[in-house]
Image (cartoon, rainbow, N blue to C red):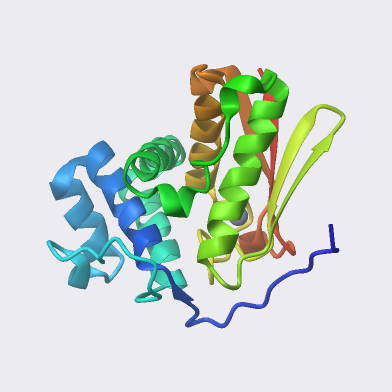
Length: 213
Ligand SMILES: [Zn+2]
């Protein structure tokens, strides 16, 4: 695989309608419609209240809007924010699998014929392909290092324009947890997903390590 580098996304980088819609669906399932509307207002995105982006692949929204919603959920839920974002990530992923097979990149994978460890890797590669086929600036790498699956996003949208001393892409962690559930049929708690690097912290990428618990 070619060596990947940090992608310098412009502040106003556009993003795909379907991806923001997937996030809104996840927030609504976990926080209810009132909760969704509250975080939309908190993040200055009241234009999406009762008016979600369409479920298509056009670049009709902004990457930093996606990140602003992540931040608003954290502010809204305080200390519970991390767990809440992970739940929303899992919920969004499930909704995407049902309603957005083109975006998710998982439709063509014959999981049943693969051993479990290969299933997990195959699903991560599917997620990578789904994002890379959908978002023209996406740059994602999937590796296996000593039995640890490593998922690295060089143009992460979850934290675009954010700054933090700690990794903040808890939503992404939730999506990867759900990807492991999709791959194995096991509960997400069977896996340990850790964000070791984060663009919001000044790293060159957001990097996630995935282990069996
Ligand atoms: Zn991050």
